[in-house]
Amino acid sequence: MIAPDKQAMVEAEIAELQEMTTGQLAEKYEQLHGQPTRTRHRQYLIRKNAWRIQANA
Image 1 (cartoon, rainbow, N blue to C red):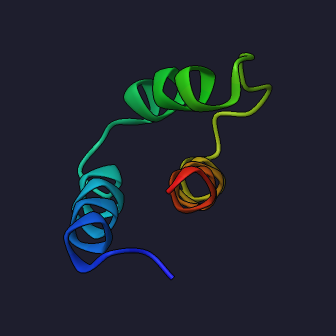
Image 2 (spheres, rainbow, N blue to C red):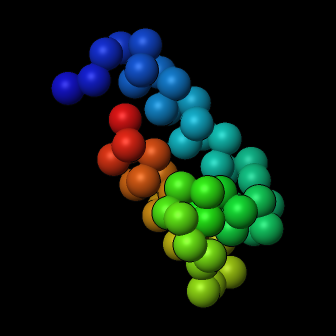
């Protein structure tokens, strides 16, 4: 379980993903995963980035 303030930060960061362009999501993916993405599928990038943000929390 994570602290409520950390939970709010995670939720805010995930909400920001919805506003990002596909290019920004690809950059975020590389930042979070340490390697470039092979896809430009926006929903996939949102899902994978959100998962990694939660896993790192």
